Amino acid sequence: MAQKNPSFVLKSPGNVVFEDRPIPELKSEYDVLVKPKWTGICGSDVHYWVEGRIGHFVVEAPMVLGHESAGIVTSVGKNVKTLKVGDRVAMEPGVPCRRCVRCKEGKYNLCPDMAFAATPPYDGTLAGYYSLPEDYCYKLPENMSLEEGALIEPTAVAVHISKQASIRPGDSVVVFGAGPVGLLCCAVAKAYGAMKVVTVDINEERLQFAMKYAATHSFRSQRESAEESAKRLIRECELGAGADVIIDASGAEVCIQTAIHALRTGGTYVQGGMGKPDITFPIMSMCAKELNVKGSFRYGPGDYQTAVDLVATGRISVKELITGKVKFEDAESAFKDVKGGKGIKILIEGPADSK
Ligand SMILES: [Zn+2]
Ligand SMILES: [Zn+2]
Image (tube, rainbow, N blue to C red; front, side):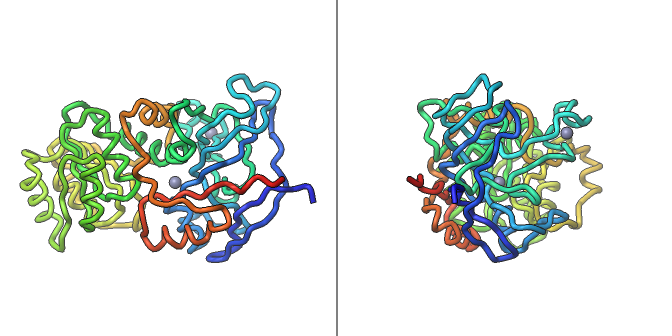
């Protein structure tokens, strides 16, 4: 009965329960134990909750949900040098093997043996305690709240996408999709010196929010062909010969097609959103314009620290993305709200301290 590690567990699709689990042990002397204080819910968490799987990742055993967290260090291994008990940290939720070719070449996000929170079979962070290596915990500066700390995960996703896009000062950047990651891509692009940041969505409310938040121009998609849409986008947003960089954070087929048509020759396209696994792709246009077409997966070396620094220095702001906060006990209702498309980012509080 000495467990006291309340955890929000997905048993099977649509079936979640609260369980008291053993407090995790430090797996090495380089690990720390963290008490997650705030956790954001991401599309992938909701996807597992509804479907029990994402692609070939299938939930086969009960799994704790959540991976966008910040918390307080409660114990440290003997060899930990940079953190102490009581430190407030953003928690990078995926730990690679550190030994494979991809890890050694500095692309640890591509490690085939990545242990990532709330990706089966690994438990997530919606629990009383979570253990991590010290170098996957990023100390929050005084001026940053733990709520902002929970937003570092999607910010790091946007930082990685922007890195893949090689955004340069003066660039015109178009971002399809004005959900959390799309909005953060707009903010990062602006911080990196993009002259024009165009937000694209079908929802007028989201576009208005993006304009207040970080975008300089907005474009509402309509029912028209991708080529027509691209022409209208270039005309309405005065993109001249086409955009320098286009990021897709929507996953929608027509957006991806429009993006390829709206890029200038030699422009860069980055796929940042997951959608249908297969689509019709304007490969002729890609080839003839000699586009750089890239994927983006999670975040790699330096991305988490950059995300913390961008927020800490005020170059980007994440507070206004937090549209709801719920107690740990109400985690399921938060999942329902995210599924229903309510708000932008909903945070779940860590379990109350048991006396
Ligand atoms: Zn996420
Ligand atoms: Zn590896």
